[in-house]
Image (cartoon, rainbow, N blue to C red; front, side, top):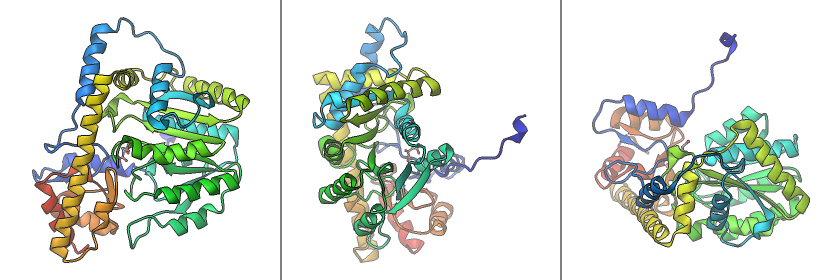
Length: 394
Ligand code: LMR
């Protein structure tokens, strides 16, 4: 029977990971998949995570199931981290999910159950897996302009014009911070305009926040999410712990559904628990427990925040070094946007052909849309990348 299956289109990011692995050149540089790497190329286990794991090993005396929604202490801790008390706790339903992707998937399913005709407005571009999951679920994705190819910033006018088409019953998917794949982000004034549009249209925002702490700081990166969530009557938030806690493979995320209506809130909570049960039953607990321990313990939290801040500053430093090296080599300011972008990624804004040339001639791996993982660089490779960019004529 399985011969009837149809081949699936390969995921561009995962295919690139394999291509990089298979490349024998010792000088190759991986700017592909979005994982943080230190100066030695290692994706380290964070100190606070190690300490929490040690404590957990000493004290955990059972691994019996938690609940379909996960451990309520994890939800509370994450809600506080993301929303910082800006939204009343009693208006928030929440379930733990396998990673941020799990939260995105459950959110889309919730939307579809609530309104089978819902359209989801997505930035053009967005994380490719958003589009893939929407298409798999048969939900219509409507792109809105986002990236300005000339300035490599946000095309705010184009975005607002396209979003004027949203209707009540639609969802607007927004990246809370550190836009993936562009690195270009809205200002708080832009966010306020988005809020006004949401309020006048009655569309529901869905915020994907996967890089809190990677842009300007933990609090600063949550500011837009807090503004939206505290301004509108209903909101979905998919939060990931993969990057900011460095626990990628533990699959740790939280989906929050905010509603001012008590009945809707109850239904959200029940439906999200139902969806967990249908899709994987109980959510993974190990990563969630580590996150809860870290967020609730002063010493662990302080250590985590310090390390996260170092990670953020090192990426920021690399951005500035790359922008200034490119300025030196090109004699122009046309790469200044690299220092303005925030988070792990920057979209260089070149063609797939040039991206392929960089890979083939220089062993530099970036996603075909010219997204670069800045954390894949180090002080030695910044000049090599800059030279390659100029050599291929970008
Ligand atoms: C990325 O965008 O590279 C990450 O979110 C990893 C992934 O799963 O695609």
